Length: 164
Image 1 (cartoon, rainbow, N blue to C red):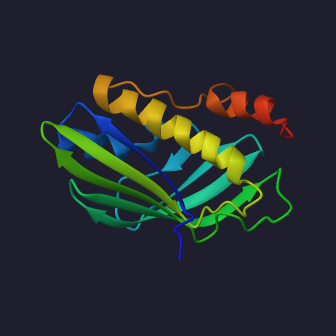
Image 2 (image 1 turned 180 degrees about the horizontal axis):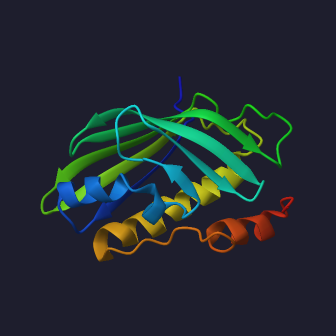
Image 3 (image 1 turned 30 degrees about the vertical axis):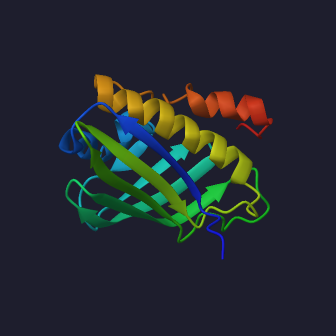
């Protein structure tokens, strides 16, 4: 059976510990609109962009310098009919050394092409992982969303999403 989960990978010019520590801070990777701890086992945090996307996640697995797994506890998009998309899916970051570099494989387990949000989410995750995360790890500065600007604002316009 084919694996239809969304997956993307990057190779960064930093050691595995630096890469791992960068991933744990979603505020510098994804968005400034995050409340709660993103780096403590068992803790939950909330994210939102206006009312376009709201979600709550929990760090459920941490294997230092190897793997981080976050489970989506609750989620809502204002642009999908099915308000349960993403719920109980997992964001998985796997790290492996490749010489002096680090390969990071990101999988959004459960984000599948049949989801109504898939094209928008694929676009967003590709930008966050290949752009913001890669830049964060290699330069110390990610490209997270601001409260009103950033990739989310661009995606809302690009995809013609409701924007309240």
